[in-house]
Amino acid sequence: MKGLVMNAHLMARRAYAQSNTSTRTDRAIEYDLIARVTHRIKSAAEAGPRSYPALVAALHDNRKLWTTLAVDVADQGNKLPQELRAQIFYLCEFVQHHTAKVLSRKAKLAPLIEVNRAILAGLNTRPVPAAGPSAQSAARPETTSMVPLR
Image (cartoon, rainbow, N blue to C red; front, side, top):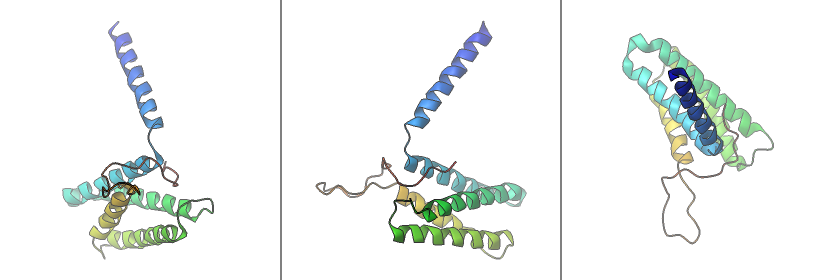
């Protein structure tokens, strides 16, 4: 009987997680992915030399994330403004080259974290309504033209 209750509990949690995921916006998913990899990079760096394998893994995932962003903005169907698409593509190139320098111990890690944080700040703002007096809200926007990273 206990196993049956545990199984029902697990099924309920999975069902809720699926429902919760389906209501999240692309922008919120992107934010979460970038935040997660940034946290992993920072945590591994702060943990010291023994966590070097974790740092390498986090940097690899950061490169994959940025490659996915670059592929997305290079797509002709991407609805972001051309100038923003070009800037994101450039940032991807920077991340790729700078990561190589970090791994060969020829550059500091901080610029990679700063780039990710700047993107997070951009994803975490809502455009100011034309009629509203408020500045930017800390709430995440409900829409984005970018494809969620998987």
